[in-house]
Length: 198
Image (tube, rainbow, N blue to C red):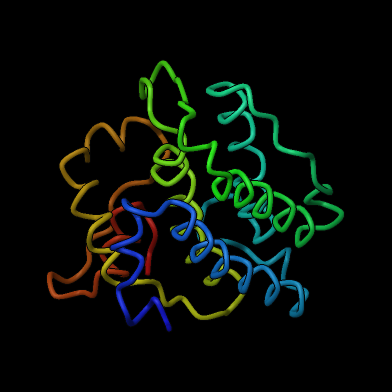
């Protein structure tokens, strides 16, 4: 089943963090492997100052510290992104999946001064898996691969983010919103909202 057409991700996003991560990570892995086959790691990414390799670097560098700080959980270290971006990504994706597949994770809480106390599976979905989902577009754009994303999930993410526009923009995590046509598809509108030029 192709989640880009089925809308399945919009359902599992809130109800099944393990399946949500497995599906999103698989889409990102596909682009990682495609980038490696094409030898495109130095291609410019749609984030200013980043190359394709830096999209992977961002994901494997910020999340382990966030997880460790909020739960004390230490993900196993993978290869360096500079030496082996595919291995670095696979190592983290497998470790996060193992964490979510472990029934004991349902009883764990991530504590963070900015977000409060959040059940661990929900925190992974909200802060990490959603980030992987959006950066899938970045890696695809940088390396000339399919930019298709689950349209229903794009629409629901945009609907959740728009009321927090000022707060998100002030965080420095997103560039200025890009204006697109009112009838643009949900993927285009979400990526334009976070500052990309689709």
